Length: 500
Image (tube, rainbow, N blue to C red; front, side, top):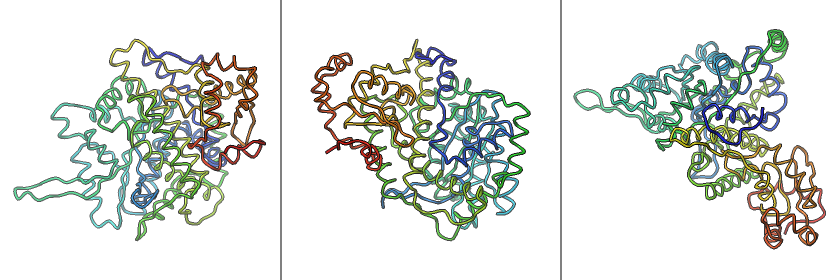
């Protein structure tokens, strides 16, 4: 299928969403994403949709756990996910396998407490929180998990006064993400009833057409912060033959891990002790995260306001993803190896890399989805691609003598970001024009820019990109402050010149 350069309809938006793929080798260890693939296929769904249920579920199970960046910045873990997929793609089995089934059938009877909520009225959820916290040792976070969320989302965006008094509102959802207080005055004496912190996780699945036509334009258009808090994932329909399902099912049954019940039980038990668990970042993970956030700030200043990266929630969601991936991947790895043991309290650079890669992928989904507002407002066409000339110029204008593909495509807005394959093609074309060389460093593709002194005879190539030799030299000699030290050291290992 040819890539869609201009979006003129919601159908084009769906096509653009289908062009974005989760880079599983970069976001999960091999043994884990292979197991997820087998487990999902054995039930007629996909690991992408399964993950859209598992991550919010994990974020509820860790309860009051925090991840500390520094003393005044501690982040909780609860996540809001919306999984988009056409009918028949496996939304219901993903919801049941990744969230509802293991909690209701396995965990809740063991802890004698309700974690899954399907109550979407404001009064019902308020009462759940009040009753849920009575006598509870430590804060527990419920999860709202709905396999077909169109009705819930429709009520959420309703502007009718009667609906707002009975249904959850977008403003309340923002507060449930943030863990804000929730109080109500009851009775003739005006007694205040409620809880100090009402925090919830959410996994909602629905079809893309109605979501992009009726739901998301209103959410984005309100600019009340809810769109910034929600992570969007898309999965197209993939045919799974019965024979393949049977083979995957057989492999799961013969393996060490047959479901998620015990995994979730371990996560819940470990994170509901007398004292809340607090995770920290290793020094290299902290540097990577801070430079990632600085990069998003630079993107904000260059692309304007219509961009899902342009808000403080971007950094919050990235850190929350790192926390949840750290906990979930560790517990799945232990279960697959049939081992036990506590989760390390320090999140490593490797896990942070996985989380940031996943976050960028989710931002790409979100960037495409946000274009629905422009269509709703009457835009005839929306340009959502980047020319090769723009990519090449970006490569040569990034600070420093080298860059990797991820650094390049992350420097573009998430709604018009070139994929890694196109970026690597531009690396090769620049190398063919004698403007640098391309090398593989582990899993990364690195472009090493040509030394400026060697380009006197090739300046016409720079001119074709509207770039002068002097400008090229200035950027070449700069230090890339957004490149983590560990990545910079890897790039320097195979070259004879070093950046000052």
